[in-house]
Length: 267
Figure: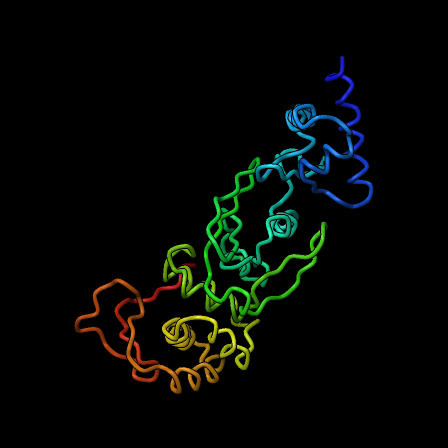
């Protein structure tokens, strides 16, 4: 009888949370609100999850799933990642193709929500929502913007920082040709005077590659400040495509770059 009576109380708890505009909670909060044992709390939450009323993107962390997202089986990632990262005490920002999409470069919708963090973490699978986590050195120095979502604010890398990261994480962004296409779509948002500050959070080779790519796609005016930054700091030549052979490759002396790949932006 007790387990049957717990369900209405648990449902009332999540309904009250949603009524106040809060769509996340941890199991300890639910247990305190329900005034029952940990086992009884977990059983009640399990029943709510089976009904599709809540979902658990991470152990002990739950989201309330409103009717419009029941088919998704979870809240969209941008609506719970800030709360999840806060609950775990992790600095973060949404980056790569996810950030590019927010900045209007959504040539192809990313299959997973991409988040940079400062230490390893397992990916999230919640209903149809997938979140990939990547490590980023100097994470808290990377320029970010706050974007509003229906459940709060999300930290997203600026267009300039996004362009730098795309070059540095070619594999996670779909390869050089896809990155060239995304950078091309980002160019309207890029402020050339802000590129050096974004580049300063990453290896100089990333700036060398991005600068070449900007000129290659016809956005030389966006690369003027970045070229001055590279000329003052680059001590040696690097390859456009890391890991690929560079013997007999032509050299772009302006960027100190071995052009060891043909760039054909994906359309």
